[in-house]
Length: 228
Ligand SMILES: [Zn+2]
Image (cartoon, rainbow, N blue to C red; front, side, top):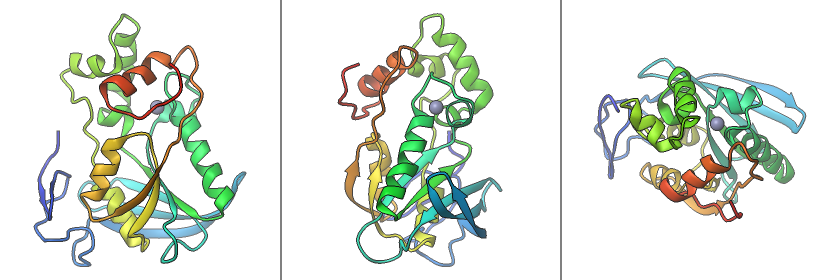
């Protein structure tokens, strides 16, 4: 599930091995390396894209930053897990793509905020191949949790140490986090990041993702208020 263990003030598991009191904020602790930054105009407005490379596995991640996010009031932050089918290929089986676009729109509306796009989080960490296999299992009756279990895979193996390190590098210590997933709140707070407010990011369900959203609410503890 995870390769090593980090011992910080709170014990959290991630892919790096670090033993300091404050893994993320210690400058000598290289969890991510800032690789490049450039302006990326989008249909939502202009962002600065910061590319990061994870030291442990070489995986590259990206943070879209709008406005001045260091200091001042806690900015809007979305910690988005990669979903190739939902984000890019128009799948209706999940709500990822709509959440991604809603987050960019909300940041643009405030003129300030960060979207961290975490690679390697497909299917809550099982990868695109196993995710497609999980979809096939869901089509014969399993739910999204059971479909991972049936493959002998963890229900959710995502960790947020890399994302937390990216935020720390951007100078963010406090934020308003856009998420429906309480596990993300806890995970980030484990890294000494303060979440001053949770901003819901609920999208309208469709017949294809209703069961998936229900499972996220009932089995994974997501806060979803809309009728499903
Ligand atoms: Zn998705």
